[in-house]
Image 1 (cartoon, rainbow, N blue to C red):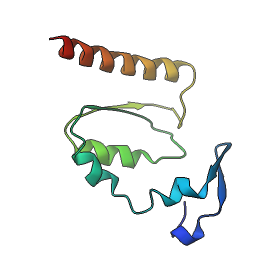
Image 2 (cartoon, helix red, strand yellow):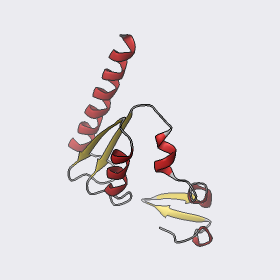
Image 3 (cartoon, rainbow, N blue to C red):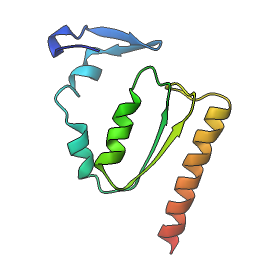
Image 4 (cartoon, rainbow, N blue to C red):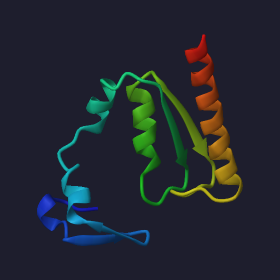
Length: 106
């Protein structure tokens, strides 16, 4: 969204949310794909293929970067999930947590 930290305004509106400068400045120099490699825990990743905020290529790259990710793409969904998309996202979350719980209980 911005080419340099100096271009980030004091506040910026993003999908109706008013975000302060810190929201963007704090993550400017982060290397998320490198940082996530050391996380080491299972990750559930759900992405709408019509996301207008976060390009799906970011999630595709994350899936290629680590081996402990369960990745689902919701066809036709934007950044938020409504109706059937919401129900599908919830089913992915429920299934993911149920499997983790079953493994933890042995």
